[in-house]
Length: 542
Image 1 (cartoon, rainbow, N blue to C red):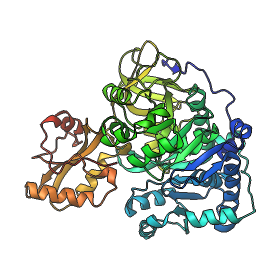
Image 2: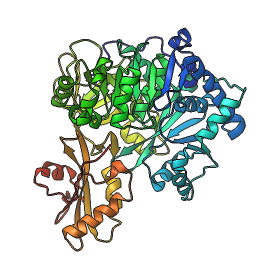
Image 3: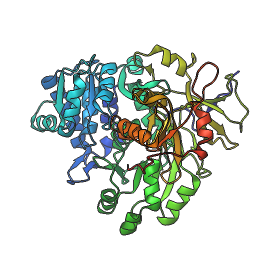
Image 4: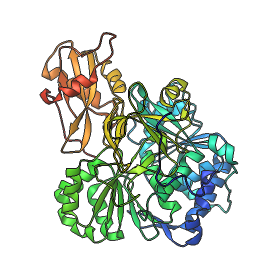
């Protein structure tokens, strides 16, 4: 019999099953405090109360149906920075049983085109500054987009209309199977894959997070939204959880350190959700010295997307008392949170905490046998928040989901005597760069297009300074020289999104290590990376 670990909190209490748009509008906290401010524009100060946000959702749904012909099962791609209207856009789309496909604003036209093609998006909602990239993406083969909508035009129509649409009903069985999101997640095999996240996946995870938060999400707290709502981390926290709990969210278009520090003081922000590079800035940036008053309101910082070192946590907590930093864990495929830190006060800062309610786990060896408690193995997780599979990719789905519903995370974990989990290593070869997953194979395929590159490999080089992996290229050159290597790197960096650039530099090597079957041995390169002499390595700005 498999050894299955279960949440110490048991199952989800009062689990909602239905349309995600109905879930938000029927939130007990929203209904109890309709005049509570749920969204604030960090730049302009414009606010939306819970009542106004719900009304905006219904007006948005009406305009999307009557003006833009959004219907059941249509896919709408959102390619824009954060705004206070982004959540209403999500729920307006979901109200009709249509699917939201959020895209990373760092994408270049070819990368955006891949997502549009695989998702079969019918509509793209964007901003003027991204319109040129969208237009170029639409010219790529296989893209079937019929309409491009600018968010400002959409909001003007929403504010002018008197029409309202309520969410379409999704009975229990349908909500468990009906896709709500196609978020794209990188895999070791190369191009990003569309993750099929159902209505029940996303709403159950919101409840899982809330029921395991023990006060981290309560009315009166004020959160700063600096992470993109196009990423599952920001999406789950800022589109769902803070709205569901009727907390106040101060929305930033994107992360910039000084405006964030200023806003923490201005709006009395109490909690932040961040990725490790932001924690590094809080620990070390001299800019923070000008804004020490942030400690008058800021109490909690939750970091995700990649592990934090205990020493870095201590640096921030020593510099900025009484701020406390905690870590969680999740994946796009788990909608996203599977572990949380608030179950009891024995939480150890190097751990990812305990399983959230309704979550199960196994830790297995390479033969898929359970390992004894305290030993390392691959983490598998199962629960109502686990994706339905990968969009139009049954092979990848079969590789990732077991027949009995466990998700193979690809992360090496350990569980201690207190049932706290620790991420020890990564079985997969994904690079966690600036909070984004980057597939080495995707970058290698691009490098090989350069006429000077005979062979290559890409791995992640960990930067202590930035607490992030940085993509590093290893190239076998036709005409080996530092000049040629730098030229290759510059050419490469100009053709990919920022987080995919070779921030870790480029190294000239004689041969790429491979096994007898020709498979790249990236781990060998990582193991010997202390001897690397990378060219063109730069500090990567957020």
